[in-house]
Length: 67
Image (cartoon, rainbow, N blue to C red; front, side):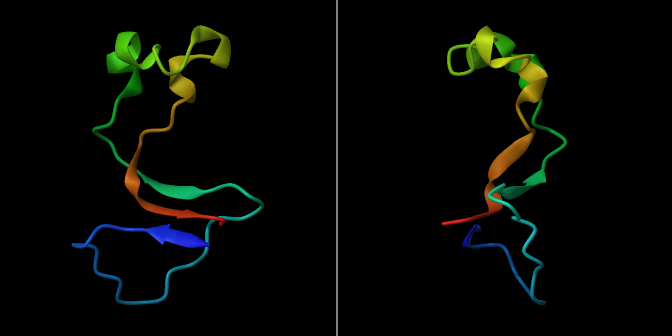
């Protein structure tokens, strides 16, 4: 597994591995609103991929993913 974190993240206790069964785990951010930027996101997430609400409101960090 790979944990992607930023230099200002301070890990004091062992963190649980929430990445199970090949699915990565990430922290949701309330201020990331994919629907607000649908026109831009559709360039990378075409309509045949589903509704824009299928995009999770996560950042690039912290994320734990299977290698």
